[in-house]
Image 1: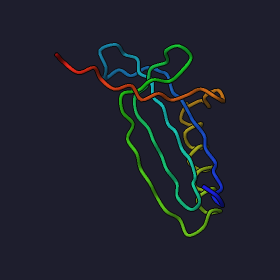
Image 2 (image 1 turned 90 degrees about the vertical axis):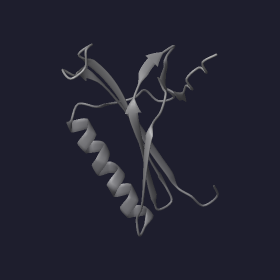
Image 3 (image 1 turned 120 degrees about the vertical axis):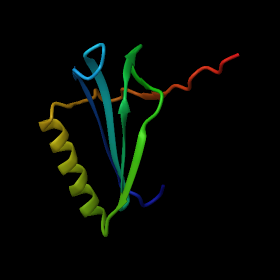
Length: 104
C-alpha cells in the first residue's frame, strides 16, 4: 500500500433497543479511508476477552474525487455517529469475525 494514506476509526454503541426481546443491543461501526475510497463496515457486536466479536459486518464503499474529500466525509460521519451515542473504541481493540460452527 505504498503511497496510500490510511485513516481509520472504530466506534461502538451499547444501549437500549425495545424491538429486541433482551431490550439491549451492541453495534460496531468501523470506517476507514484508503486513498480516495471511504470504506464503512458495520453490524451487531459482542465484546469477549477484550475484543469485538461479530459474525458478519455489512460493507459499503464510496470513491471520492480526492483523498481530502474522502477524509472530510470520514470526519463528518464520525461526528454524526458520536452525536448519535456511539463512542470511540479503545485503540488496539481488535475486531474479530467469528464464523458460525458447522452443524454435524
